[in-house]
Amino acid sequence: MSKIEVNKVGPQCGTTVTVGCGAGQTVVVDANTVTLGRCGGTVSLASGATQSGFGRTGTVDWQTTPKTATFTATSGEGYFCNTAGGAFEVDLPAGSAGAIVSIQDYNNTFDTHAITIDPNGSEKINGGSAGGTIELTTEGEGVTLVYVDSTVGWRSIHQSTFADTGSNAAYVTATGGTITTVCTNYKVHTFTGPGTFQVTCAGNACGSTEISYLVVAGAGGGAANGGGGGGAGGYREGKSPETPYTASPLACTSGSNNGLPVAVASYPVTVGGGGPGVSSGRSGCGSVSTFAGTTTITSTGGGGSGTYDGGLAPCNAAIIGANGGSGGGGGGGTSVPGIPGIPAANKGTGNTPPVSPSQGNPGGRGMHSGSYSPTGAVGGGGGGGAGGPGGEPTLVPGTAGAGGVGTPTQITGSAVSYAGGAGGGIGPGVGFTLPSGSPCGTGGRGGRHPGTDAIAGTTNRGGGGGGGGHQPQAGQNGGSGVVVIRYKFQ
Figure 1: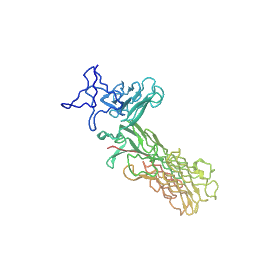
Figure 2 (figure 1 turned 135 degrees about the vertical axis):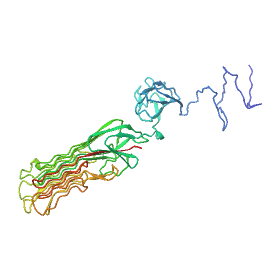
Figure 3 (figure 1 turned 30 degrees about the vertical axis):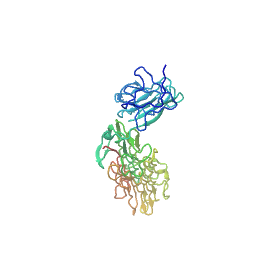
Figure 4 (figure 1 turned 60 degrees about the vertical axis):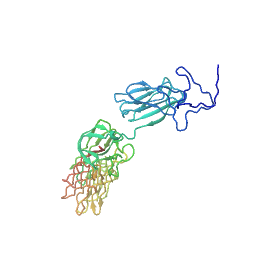
């Protein structure tokens, strides 16, 4: 056996030095430190050659042909998975320390058809149960997994979703109601009666995915004979960050109902009618309005109003305003002539049932000045409004209660007021001031005896119906509600 020892091997002619004798031969370099290449140089594997023992740098070699059905992954590889044709499974290889696999949504379909990642046998993922799987269910989602040990198993070291799809941005598209375009990029659907909000495209995060909404219920009617004003229909508004506009101060702008996500689906819409005004007894309540979206938003009808008790006991139900989105005003009257006022319990409460933010306010109580003509009067309480409670009568000088304030919003593209309470009616007597409706103008003004009729609430604005003066003056009908949907469409 021959042995040659040298300090350095250098090229004698040309620029290539070959060590080894070709196929089937092994070259061993035995030293504590081995340096391959030089500063600025390149160390390459020959075509088709593989390496072992050097470990990985935390990256994978991406396989650019998308996977469309269940397959077994190989350590060191990343895969684009296309679930457009249906959900499937990625089976992980047997775990060894440092093994690495990456999975990525190919074309944003994981939210429609999830990908399931299944470990080998009883191995774990993220320290979970033995053999437990994970699902990727978010559009554009990707994950990189590294096998650590038998305690933790495969650990997710990186997880992300797409931030920008460029020209692939998708926007909410829908039909239903009366459709208008506002501020160039936003559609508004207005429902003045029952219908369906039909979503045909749910959009994506780079376009739009949510809607803003306004749901106003029908308002309560007014009662006669110094009756109270009708309560406004319940008012509920949610403003999504995707649809900027000047919302009502009462709108929900944070939390779960500040805007609603949509899916491709049919969402029923109900628009509540106004409660009837009456010529005797307590008036009718308004009806609910609903938008049955991914979360159902329901606004309660406004409370009907009470009437003069006619000398009956204070517990007579006819003098008590009804509860509702906003409460109805109490009827004027007292069971004992000469003693002004009746219990506060004769006014209806608002925000019934309770929601947050509040959908409305209580009505005002009614009063009697103690005698009829020429100085006495029966005054009904004002109906509650979305923005404030109904007013109460004053006896000197005599007035009925004003309607509670409504509230404006620009969800339709311009400022419009909704859900104002109605003014109460004022009965027999002279020299008394006419009661007013809501300061926002949607609730009707109350009537006066003699000679001035009450006014109905504004249609599709949820305004209460005005209370009537003395017989034969009747209270007036409450205004119907409305449902408005707004979203970004381009």
